[in-house]
Image (cartoon, rainbow, N blue to C red):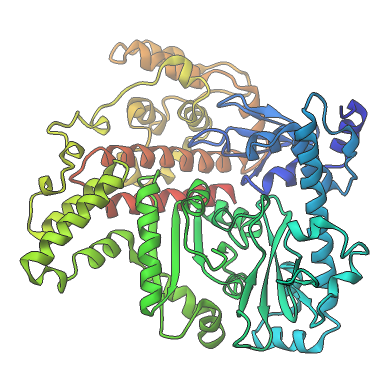
Length: 599
């Protein structure tokens, strides 16, 4: 078992704030850091990280713990794997002999093998990297591809020499270590008489998993050779499965989570060039087709995905395969998926070098939406020029819709397809997606929150701020007043007329008695007003710091606006007659507000 002393010493070496901020956007709030909880869906930040106590706590779902617990919950790691991950980050040796307590001998053996394999791959990565600078041809090749030394170092790019057994210099048991075969670093000749390196005379790209561990390699020839593949990957192992890994994901994941936007390309150099150009939310599919695992990995942390493909026939076929993967696996109904087709004989790498960053940024704005991709592929004018073509299109769409999960996107796509094909949506056999009656939209109703819910709600906090500084109310535009605190309009009117102001210096509420005697107001409204006027030591102390209360107002205003827009988007989602572009526009505004709030 891992001793308590070892655990305590490890936690002392790790700062929980930068550890968590790699995966969660945190904003300083007093002595704590605040962000949206990664363990449950929420609109208002309630996830607090305390630097002095090295502890996190969510006031929404109750999730709590130290750095080890965070890694266990966030990455679904076992206690031992979380400890190993933390040891790696802290540069501490993990005592393997202590690692397993009540485990079977077989699982203990497997863990040991996995650990040994990772060490071999890491040693190989360091060896390849050390050889890059000393080979002028390799360095020159990277320069011709526009890759700077800083970016090459960031991606740990290396070089495998032209010798058959370069790795002998890294592994003294080169010919006798069977694990070198299992991880794909060396191989045997067909006759079995000769052992040689898998990668020779190639630029080497280490492939990292989401935790930053080397699990495989990719290699690109420096000189094109018809007898050798231009690109070569490690074989699949239990550490490396191509359909589950995205090149560059380890570096890109925090940028994707922050911007809620991912760019997907195909090649190693495409990813590297995109990052170098500032598009650090870019990942690559390792030269293979997009898989369900790839898409779900991106959908989990983002709300917009752009796929970039070559503009030739092969690129369009690959894009259509990707579109089908997205359609079948889509969980978020408001996710934005677009496709970019590059000019002939161009990939992102060459496009950036020839056209520049601004041209690429402009190109990213011209994407083809997923719905358009579907309709243009299946319902093209050429296909619909005959009855047979139209029948085939309906049949293909029927199969496609059957494979898709239900929701507003599916309903919208069915309606658009029906219009384009001039047929009834019943032809697609999915009429259950269209209920005959719709409940009254919640946005047309006004409800008061339950008292217990309102105690710590942003609405109550906003009322407290406004009665302490009514001038803030003047900054709310007439357009925003259409939704802002609509349920509490009576209280806001009183605040605006300066008839409801608390005396914070004495802690006595001068206005509450007069307000409470007004019989035109409901008991509920009177109770809320009194609660807002009640002395609040925390907020009243904030008044002593100039400008702090105004910043609190701005933060709460954005929080309430996000809440309003989320409700609006949900109501629109329930109505199949609403255009999905309208919902996407709202979602973009929400993302923009969230990013601004966390900065």
